[in-house]
Length: 280
Image (cartoon, rainbow, N blue to C red):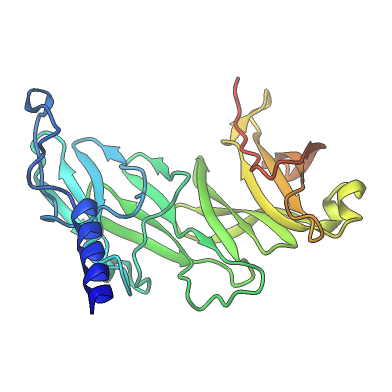
């Protein structure tokens, strides 16, 4: 009985510390333009989709029920007043049912719309029926879901980065023996592979050890002097015999010409991820 009381007490404490407070005692009101309790004391919980802004609307999120089928909400708030202009719930994202706004590495916003996706991190032998696997586009100004597209069944990890260039958004996808950079037409939601990298494309020093693809990150899409779209990808390979030793290959691709510009190998031994960016 005492154990049950302790467990219930800890659960209530978690709820209290996770909820937005009605008394913002730590906020200096002199610096506050407005306050908006968008959903009472609901939990923020998820990371969100990046709080995109367009004209007079900013997008917030809340998660009143972070258990079972997650009933999250997107709120479009008036920037000047904090009043809610619209909200999107599970019903608006059909056939998607479980709203988990955890697009951890950002979204792609173009004018009044934003593209975001599910972040799926399934192990090599894990069943996929517990995961929802969608990418979607939202109209910030109108508060409307424009389309929702399922990811191809072959991928087990995807969605942890969305970047854009022109009419396309990009996200990475991995099934442990192939990495793809997927592009989605932001008008239609149609998905296709911009880049496919298999074990046969790895350098011999890595391929000879029969590795699993571990992680891949890619830079923002940039342009060369000819105006072609270019992307750099850092692909980490993990050895089964030594899972903490990674060898990372840097690939640079011309997306316009659909060709590889070059690749090179970078050795890592600390098990870290190889984040990448482009500067000048």
